[in-house]
Image (tube, rainbow, N blue to C red; front, top):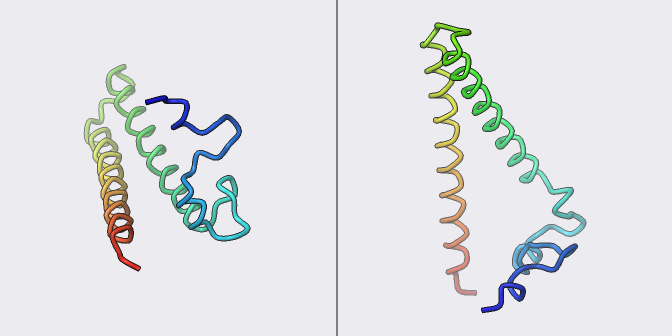
Amino acid sequence: MNIASVTAPSGASAASPLAESLRPSGTTPEKGGEFGRLIDQVLGKITGAQAEADTAVRDLALGKTDNIHNVLLSVAKADLTFRLVLEIRNKLTEALQEIMRMQV
């Protein structure tokens, strides 16, 4: 199989034809819509929680803090946030697969 035939040419959208057909008219991948902004916000929160946990663990390892309770809370918060987003992704994938199985 030729990998060049599978990848999108440079400058072209990497979205599938199905994704292009489902996009509301007048929107582009760069602009997005409400759903795109929601996803960006959620991913920003995940990144923030992970960065906070990393900083807390680093501070504990370097001796800048001795409050293990707060470190464990920040790590648990980051873990819970990641698991929540993972489950949302799984549900969205299942819903899309169910839609694709529908007969028209």
